Image (cartoon, one colour):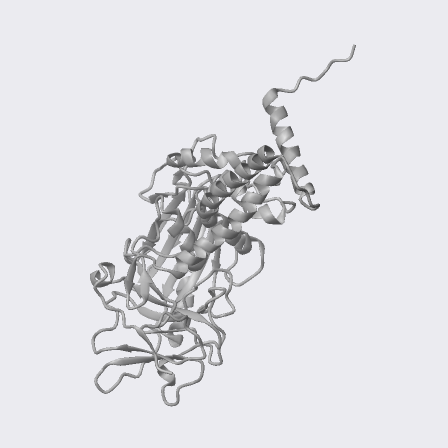
Length: 479
């Protein structure tokens, strides 16, 4: 006698629901006067539930997904500043419109970049004596939080070595080396070194190569290896190339959460995300989802993307004369929307005490900046940004957040590297326009013919900037 397979009532209900939703989609292609309202409502409820959770998951997950994508570019593809995992890469020139790996680069400092994977063992970061030259080695976790900055503002400019260890490392040392614990095994180092104009570039380049990395096990004989079973050879999950296009983001997020698990304080949120299968190991994501859920998640990606873009293009917290900035960036806690917005348009933003990025998208009439107009930014005598390092104004394309290509290869103007021409009363005018202003080229920031936005970088901002009392001049439309 053959054995009959017993199917549980719950599983049978799911199967019937999936079949019913699929059938409704097929039947929608032909004119029907009646359909099962109960089944239709069931499908719609699941689609709405998936949509609601999906929007939250998109906003939560955009930052770690962008980090994962960016790491993949830097460690697997050839390019200036690229290097394999746990190796230092060096950008040997000031960033230009040709540098498109990361949005909103700055043109004021030299970059060194490294991507660390710390499952196996810690990595030692060596910094040279910079002879009072300003620098910062910013350390970000897999969720774009800056958990440490090594530099002249924190550790001074003398030579030093710093051990960067993952969350599972419990080793001990016989040295006085400082240990920096990362919340995640993936760490992004963004190094910035001050450059005092083009003539200073060779000196800065020579210093840049002295920022190096090495595994802790190779650091002399002073390290005692950690005895921790969680330290294994480097292995990292990768997103499946076979994921549906409409669900590819969630496949990437599923992998990002596996490689760098969120904090224990987010367990309840992860339980919600499990309702759409983000905690599962199935790959590619979505192979076991019913059509209604897929439809809801596809809508969630589109709307989540628009929500994030609107946030970046809107107010970030402090608004002064149509410039907006936040003093809560760099570390985000549970502010996932701000984290996502910064990852979208300002990836790698530093801590407020290291720098404030004020953004302007429109003129006094709330019209987007466009190269069809001419603009002027006027600083009264003694009213340029009160900073301890430098300030600069950078020009970016409004659609891709990158530097704008122009005839003189100038992407920013700043007090550190540019020779401004001041007015007779010691005030300063910055000319922002597409065409060259006759006789004013020293103070000209070239604009594209299309829409753009501006970022005013203020490195080591003074208290007036941090508390919002410094009045950033409004960008005036003059023609």
